Structures are given as structure tokens and as C-alpha cells.
Length: 294
Image (cartoon, rainbow, N blue to C red; front, top):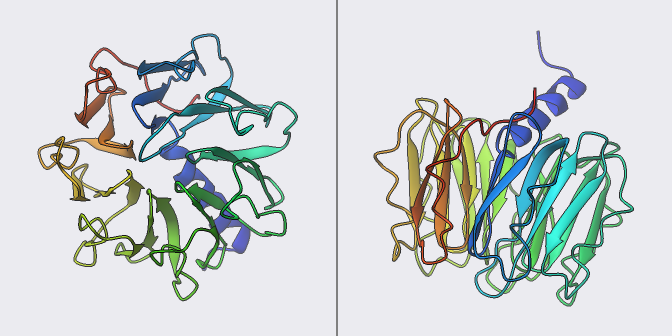
């Protein structure tokens, strides 16, 4: 029997949530524990790692930038949102939000997806990246540095913001089940397990057309990550800090990309990290019980 639209939507929300237990920011990492508390590691000049008092969190996001500062966002079980860190552009002003089912964070903004399929955005909007008030029927959101993406139930994408490198040229894409955004590129996971990419390709971060049998994707500033059903991971793009050196990882169930680092959540609730570690963003070896709350 074919799945109904509501069943499709629920499945996509669960896929989104499965990757929301870990997040990578500019130079910090965030992990969600099964008891609804949050841990963080890495640079903390603006308090982006001050999450130890958060409770009842069901998903986390981190401002992933190619340069600059960052913030951290948490979605509570009651649909409200909390944020901490850099707030120069009001990207942490989310305390009034209600009815949210997902969150995403860009360089200087925060996105919230409501249960009715509409989207909220706060923060920097000089490129039109927060112009999402008219969006409807959205089931997933993703934030690059200067562009925003919304996934619809029919597998198509809508976009807003900077399109200098064609990162918003995604209107012809279809049959998508997930979307990820880097600094100036976009990746989309198709229902057949292949991946599409558009935008800046200076570091070959868009060279993913040969990937097959992918079940989840993520993006760092200049790299793209793909998770296979056997728990192994692929990566393409800039690898100066070893952020794409993930070919030996096994038993991974979710992936996330920071600016120049990559995170992988293992089935046992521990986390692997690769890439730049000058600020301690890869110091996640002691993390355990990282998972979505039961």
C-alpha cells in the first residue's frame, strides 16, 4: 500500500530528528543526550557552549559559519526554543516561538519549522535569507551561511537568500527526502539514495553525483557528508584539517558537519570527530548516551 502524505511527512520528520542529536558549529560541537540534556565542546567566546542547564531538549542545531562567531539552538519537547551564543543580529531572540517541530541555524540567523508547515526566521537578512514568512507545507529546513532551504512533502525545494554561486538553483530537483546547506553550496538526498549538489565547488564539495545508497547527508562549510546504511561514511570537499577523513568510520547512525570538522554518532551513543581541533571541537571522546530523548 502506498504511504499517505501524512505518513510520508511523519517519516521525513523522523529522519530529520535522527540527525538532530549532534550538531557542528564554526568551532564547536553539540550533543543531545537521551535524558534531554545537552553537552558541548569547543570555542566558547560568546557562550555558545553554555548549554549544561538546558533540559527537555529534543533537537539541537549550531550556527555553522565559514568564518566568524556562532550560536547554539535547542528545541524543547513543548515546541519552544532556546538559544545561546553570539546574538549581534538577534539570532538568539527565539524565546517567544511556540509550536516548533524542528530548528536550524545559519551563520547569523535561526530558523524554526512549525507543526503547520510554516517557517520562522530571525537574524541577519541582508541577502534575503530570512524571507521565509510566506513559505507553507515545509517539512524540513536547512541554513547555509547566506541562503535558506525548505523541503516540501512532494520532494521539491524552495530557497531564499544569496545565489551568487547557484546554491539556490534547486527548483528543478525532485524526489528529495533531506537537504543540507554549507557555506555556499546545497546538497539534496533523493529517495533513490543518490545525492544532488549545487553551488560553490571550489573544493569539490559538490562532487557527489557518483554516491549511491545514501541514507542521510550533512554539510560543513566546504565539505559534504553522506551516511550509508551499513554505518560507513563518505565525504567530499575541503580536507585541509582531515574533516573528510572518515572512510574508516563504522557503525554510524547520524552525521553532522561543522565549519572544518565532521561528527558521527555511533549506534552505542558515542561520537566520533575528525577535522580541525584547535579549539577542542573534536574533544568528544568522553561523550556517551548521545541520542534523541525516549
